[in-house]
Image: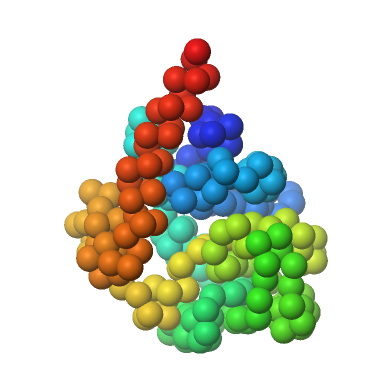
Length: 242
């Protein structure tokens, strides 16, 4: 296991984490870590503490994989979420889709049902959730319906740090839960609101370049992930050695 900014990174492969989910005796909370999430943890000690409470931290972003000197396996949030759907179909587990921006959860539900017609899935967008995980009335009601549904797989798309704070507060609300994951922008892809990078670009870790091309307004976030993050990792390592 490696640490970035004091946050442990398991960086397991997809088969490793799926095996862990299948064999675990309690709900498994998984963070799909990327440079943005870790930079936020570096700046906010409370958020860093939340990230440490998760059971497994996968390596999502290419920049994070480089920061581990390629000694971890990279599993993107979308890839992992799609594998969990396959697992749920095999095991006949119920799946909850929670969060996303307007219409994303419902559109994602349609996409999932096309792929797995027999899968039991509930989508709830909810309302507002604060950075500390506090719900408004709409979100509280949506969570109540999700609790009644009682999923074994729960995919939470609120963006960081909201999704991690919300998961930390409500993990125990779902007694049959096998795995919960903060999936960030996954619903954007499933709903068709955003296109994934071509496979060849994904294979070379160039999703950031694709997002810069199709979503240039994200340039500041991309610079943070591609340029600032590696520099701060190096600085942090020098300080630790010194």
